[in-house]
Image 1 (cartoon, rainbow, N blue to C red):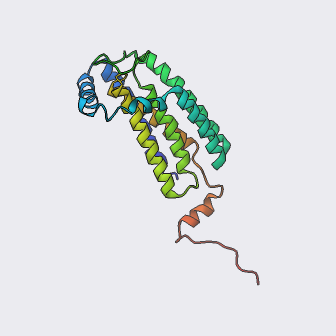
Image 2: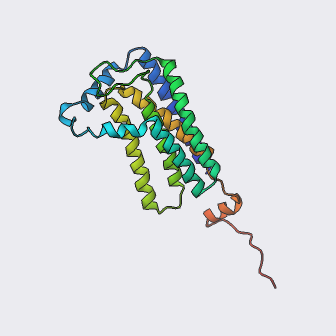
Image 3: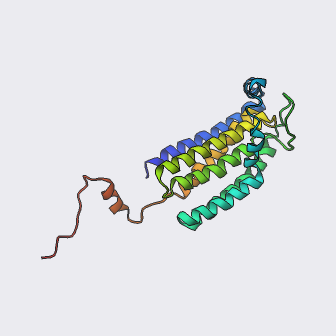
Length: 229
């Protein structure tokens, strides 16, 4: 259990550095070529019809959808384990929404003007709120599912499906023309840091660590009581 903490910390630091690094590069106008290349690929006429369902999928990262997921996370966590984990999940999702809005005002990046948007969005662009909140909401649900007692194949399918949904929500923001790819990447990274923090905060610890350690190590010496008589 403890062996996982350093790697989690490294990933969280890497995520924070990625967001900060992107903000610096954007301020220096050093991401334009990358953003343009990705936009050209995603908005290619050849795949326009194929990606048209993204107009609907993007709504799963909206504030309304995320609030609904926060309620679902609370109910699911209360059903499979300590209810406080669900409460923490709901609070983290809601606070992430507020934090994203504050960060947008700090960076002040305008919406893309590289092509005509499919829909109109207002406010600043960096980071992508749908991408960040989608990562937080569905990422936390994935953590809860992975800790549940559902059969492993079902857990795997659900977690992979949630990961695909997060990816599609981010891609939808570029396809719709309301975010730069770097906005989406920053949103994923920021959301990922929050999910990792939630997972570390709510990690289950065995109430009997010594006994659990012996059970995990078959070669460990046991000190069972001798049989009576």
